[in-house]
Length: 308
Image (cartoon, rainbow, N blue to C red; front, side):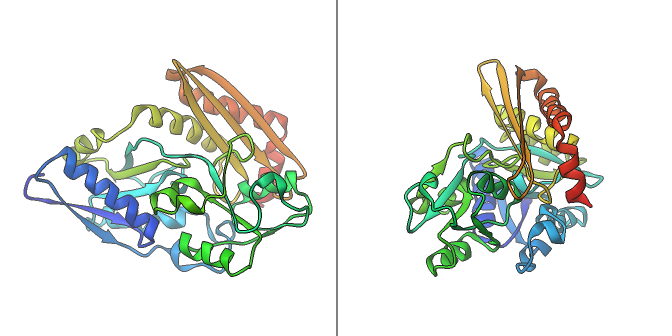
């Protein structure tokens, strides 16, 4: 690529720009002399802020325009939060690398309460994630779960303005933006099971761009890749997106992979949980088995009702 600039498609939010700049830095460090350039693109998901993602098309709204940029040739790669990446890719594009995963946990953020477990029954809590909502409502059936969209700064400002007693965000995003001090409590995965791919950054590119693929291969973290592959295999079997309350989290334990999955009613009245472990080279099979276990319990009924 010497002499040619690597163009990185990214959303314009502070967190997306941090992620794109992080990848640019890794590329320039791994390949001295290479130059990068950010191609900043507004996505439909960034423009529609007055409706829950589940109502306007899901998290794929954050990646479609970036993918179009690569297909049209105005960008070479695109950087995504893996929890925003749909299961299927457009023809000609694929996921070339997943970086070492950061903190996968959800963050409890409050100016009034020190822990999630000490909230009052009628707490006003902000999140637009159905996954978070069903886990909150399971513990606090009387909680008022209020919609919360926008970038991290916008969400924190609304908390500080008193619109909520607490909000739930991704720990990784706060830490990347230098706002770890706003995390009141990191929510253990036993309290709030994370989203598929949470905490991991993925890099997408054109399948036929051999040089770019070879470079991105140097950035790929195999262990994170195995865990995210298991989670995405579960999600694919469930036909999941952000329209539905699905959580999935895989961890490596030596040569084994341990995976937990969850599907729940948004009102928290019914949550199905499943877990499996097996050899790490069976990661995707383990993910699919977790999905089958959830479906066998009755998760299909919840998913069908929500899709309708």
